Image (cartoon, rainbow, N blue to C red; front, side, top):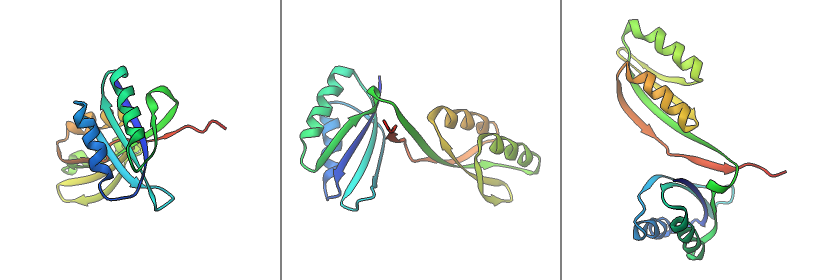
Length: 159
């Protein structure tokens, strides 16, 4: 099962290493990892996506919660949340293909951020399924470069 875990941590040296080590020690491969500061410069939020058994991952969540510098742990598999990912891609685009690529970008609300004689750089953000569908369409033109942020997530407000 796929789990999205949000961890609020103190923004200190070595925290990422300890948390990654916890997953490694349990035999979990981290699918995506995103770390960034929050509104409070003293804290950072880590969003980790892993595949794993519910029972074992529950134990990992409890162990994470006990780590020094960890403020809170939330497994979004059990709650309602919003997630997004950002992707930058470079697509081969000759004169014939440009208009079709631009139409697809409009449909997916992607932005063309750089134009070169034989390529376009595109930025797209959204859910994982939206990203995958867009990339499948762009693949027919020839993707020469791709970079992804990994998933970021936020719990839906209960108010």
